[in-house]
Image (cartoon, rainbow, N blue to C red; front, side, top):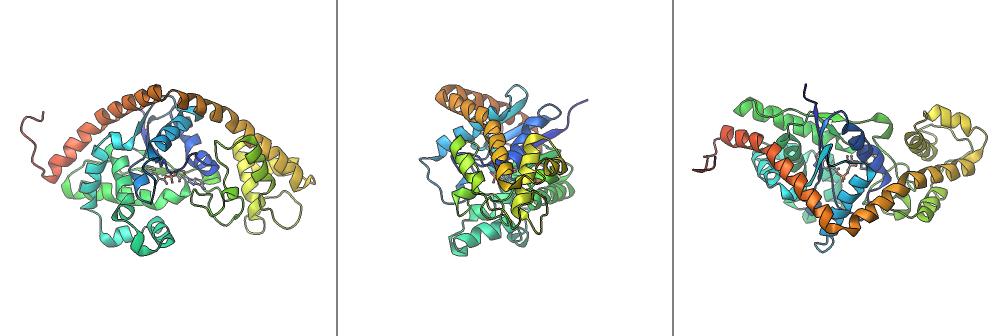
Length: 337
Ligand code: TYM
């Protein structure tokens, strides 16, 4: 029996992924390679939707791929590629865009958040159609499941709606994808502002732990993480959001239930708990960091690996794309097979 297919993507918008990306998405990507037919993508076209520096983007795409490999993606067990290497993503985005309501796109909360940050007039049409490109990414591979964090749930609902709409209007073509979201790690919070999601666009770098941070930086950021009144290491999302976030991180990295961690640090105070948490994060990322640097040292090998992934992705996408073109009534070019 063939395995269910997963697809997911990550943007190359920073020099390192952060702990939220790692726990909310990347760790699941690694695990799913063994049970699923997995496609993972560095979504560089999505990275064009907010102001960025074109001189930095190639390095960021490479370091994104290198971190994914270092975290455990195995090119023999999954297909890892760069979005712009497979032109069909942009083509299908256009086609699905013609099925997307303006009002429907306008209801996307990530668009509202991101466009209000720099003032609505500064937002690009690309930012507006970001979720349509995301739908194209997923539908092109007939993905059954999409491992992401909670913030992507609404985008996945749009992907499902577009798959169903296309199928209804033009005939069965796309698989409506399901979200794959693990509740315990679906939303990791900022260490300085436990009411906000840990995010690349956070106001203070002190609130974000980067996968490629030095051990000293990780220790410093965790030591200074905002905790709550009292001294008890206890999960309580309402009264103790800061400590609760740290407990969830600890639990996710150690594999112990939150209750077991609470029991172990009963009466120990925040200091001892934070110290151990810092060592746990340092230990988790040490190997990823070293392997990323090694992979970045041989750019040609990394680029070859990505070219290989893109060729596989193109092959997987071709039949779906051909069917979508034909069903939408696009005339086949003579001699195009
Ligand atoms: P990006 O690069 O912004 O985020 C990558 C992944 O990290 C998750 N994430 C978090 N999870 C838990 N806690 C956090 N604080 C946190 N911050 C980020 C995100 O949910 C995401 O899974 N739009 C996608 C990129 C994309 C995509 C796709 C994903 C483009 N096409 C197709 C799936 C399928 C995104 O948010 O990337």
